[in-house]
Image (cartoon, rainbow, N blue to C red; front, top):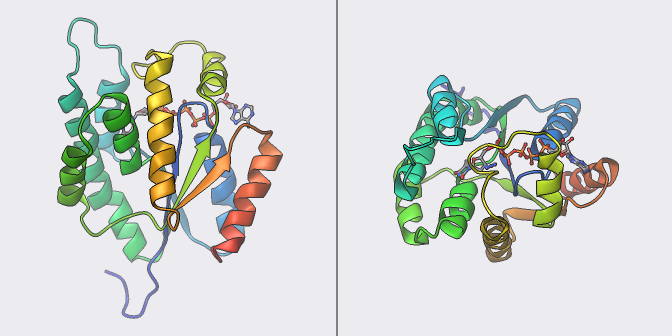
Length: 214
Ligand code: Z5A
């Protein structure tokens, strides 16, 4: 339990299409936060807990004849998230620790909503169930053209179940992200991720300074 008067930690999320550089930038942000006096926990979705990582393996694997339906995919994302919120995100924030997560619920709106076509109202009802009173304090949307992101991840070799989707799917994901960012400018910051690492990091640092986070 937090001591009385203890300050709550921040909840910061990274979002974007594949190859946007979320994992790469997460390391940079964690180092910067720690240098400036934050205690930091890095995590990711789907995953972040033992159960969540097991769900992640199922979700990312090519399933052959046992296709995952769109609703099942959404429900598994939220099952993993429920455990993640209860076991990692909420306890750390309450203990004054800054939680930095590679993806959160915005990914469900972008991928299962924009990409798969599930109605936003259905996703909102799961959000209300799983974390009605918990939302990121800041979401960094790393934005770049779909072709560039896919080219970057293509260099890694084998693709997972999501990366095997068509260009059209990722265009819908990207445009859903941009719509969400436009609708909630107080929470989102759009970072142009189609630049070199140093430029992106300068931009991220400036955003964190502007918001008095570092
Ligand atoms: N998903 C979902 O559908 N619904 C949900 O609710 C949630 C998730 C939570 C997770 O897989 C999948 O789950 C994801 C969405 C779905 N779909 N996919 N695929 P993941 O974690 O494996 O995928 P990802 O989050 O997209 O990770 P990623 O492909 O590794 O992308 P990234 O983390 O943004 O990029 P990175 O690993 O930092 O960089 C990728 C490569 O680009 C790497 O070789 C870097 O060295 C290089 N890179 C990075 N930045 C640059 C710059 N600036 N220039 C040049 N090269 C760069």
